[in-house]
Amino acid sequence: MKAIALFSGGLDSTLAMKVIINQGIDVIALYVNIGFGSTKDRREHMESMCRQVGAEFMEIDIRQQFLRDILFSPKHGYGKNFNPCIDCHANMFRIAKEMMSELGASFIVSGEVAGQRPMSQNIRALKTVEELAESDNLLVRPLSAKLLSPSQPELNGWIDREKLLDISGRSREKQLKLADEFGLVDFEPPAGGCLLTEPYFAKKMRDFVKFDKLEVDDIDSLKFGRHFRLKDGAKLIIGRNADDNFGLQNVKSKKFNTLEAVGVKSPFSLISATASEDELQFALRTVLAYTKADIESEYKILFNGGEKEFIVKPCSSREESRKYSL
Ligand code: SF4
Image 1 (cartoon, rainbow, N blue to C red):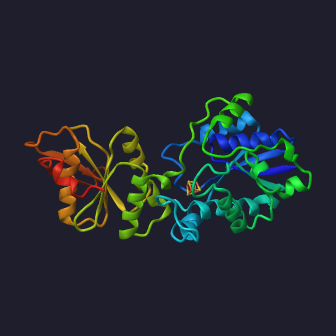
Image 2 (cartoon, protein in one colour):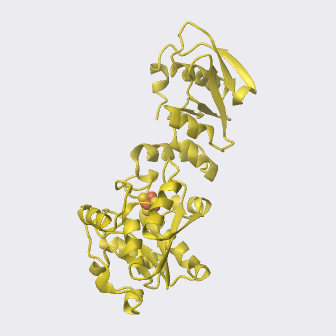
Image 3 (tube, rainbow, N blue to C red):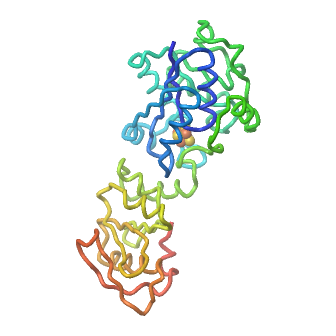
């Protein structure tokens, strides 16, 4: 018997898999990449969690489908920020269900805990998600199963309901105890959800879609840096630290040109390819304002790594740019 588990890399989904594996079921840990998971590459961590419980790791990239079908038109609305959690969960279950026959799996496992999150994990929401996903009662939530009506795998005797759990609420105490019992190490502290649940990220999203259509390659540009919306609508993004600079260097979107000052330690920056001449000049001076450049001196700035070069003085202060800051 085999099951597909929706796996986030977090503790709850790892524990849920282990509870099922302990009943002699093979588990495929399916990480569904919607594009907004994290600013860090967590693959190594996810593989380590899978190794610890004996699950097989698998990743599926649904970014395109998520943008097209879910993110901007969730039937059940958004949580506090830009997070369409109910529709997002249901979409993941639907995808896992579609993959069941191809992977030879008989049911689906999820690490949701009843009452853990106000919008997406109260008992009614868990039911709604199941209905939306048309899961045919093949969805098992091992951590809260005893508080929910029996799933088909329990009714069929594929798994023993008695060995499932009755965890509910926001406290992590029982999960930590279980992690200890299972000998899990290096698990992540509980996270509040993906980037869409974060207020500043949601603000950047709302701003982006006011001016442009969000495409898969644009997503990374929202994950890094300090964001400005300039007077004619161009976007300027300035790296705040080494991680941002690295992240911005790897943005694949063709909607931006890059800026980098020479002769002074410079943040890596992106400016909309559609920026007006005024906006570009302002962006060049603003980038210098976020360095230790001397305000009386001129500096060279490389545009797209040297495709063009500009010689400019910094803005006299960062205040000038703050009114455009998101
Ligand atoms: S937190 Fe993000 S990934 Fe998780 S269900 Fe909500 S929208 Fe989807």
